[in-house]
Length: 378
Ligand code: PMP
Ligand code: GLN
Image (cartoon, rainbow, N blue to C red):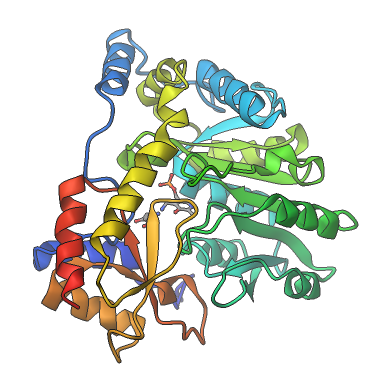
């Protein structure tokens, strides 16, 4: 039968993790921590299971978890989402994004993505029958180019997807940029997915500026986050969507027939663990130290490092190290140098030629020290 996604293969993250295992390489490719989570979180889930929280929770998610998320967003960003009608717990950010797209995009609708972008967005749009319109971020700086975004908006544009802190470039949007987007969208009916999974990883005193802070964005936005990133449990696949009631109602129509709901004990445990804000408030300092350790270890390497303002990724320009393109370079690097990285071409449509690769520094200090030692030899 004809493929629904003829251009899609296995994701680069799966491919690179398999190559890393095969070649016993240090895996800085796929974004996940190589260390454990807080034992208090494990205890909270254990207690939830033993307390009998093992049957279906309400379709929209465990009520105490929705309350905790609503309280956090209000405390950090000053907007109150109603836990009953405006917050939904999802099977990770990935399901949240797919469900928001399926709920809003009709056959032939256009969806603007900003390249480079996370690899699930475009296949998700295609599955919904939409047309992905790839608008590049400014080459080199990865800043949004509002003239190009404005030029891409047509009467068929249903949705725009933004992501700050940004995977893979590790940039974060400024207040001026968020305001400019708000002004640009004001006269339109374009909806927004604001992918904020790295919301608690911003460095050098910067603040994460959620779309929740900007009324003109929040009123049209599905704001997506992920406990996997924040609490070092990427394998748990629990995320959130905050959106105005009318958008949430449509989201839940799809969600209930997509996953119906998300596993109960993780949600109940997370609700308990979230009562203490320290883990997410301290996350930026935790990862800033890892960024600085890794960058320090790369002093003297011929890689040209790009700045990391947020996320747990560090990008590097390879042009002074190799003649290979970034995809070939990553294949060579994992086999010959023993370090796995992700080529930025995996996040672009056709015509990419920036020769940049991404390293994940959500790793034990000794992993970062070992990887840096190998990379210094380049
Ligand atoms: N969006 C971005 C930008 C991501 O980097 C990721 C995780 N790699 C996701 C969404 C998906 O998150 P989850 O694992 O919670 O599905
Ligand atoms: N989000 C992770 C990354 O960017 C990977 C998640 C996945 O493997 N799909 O590395």
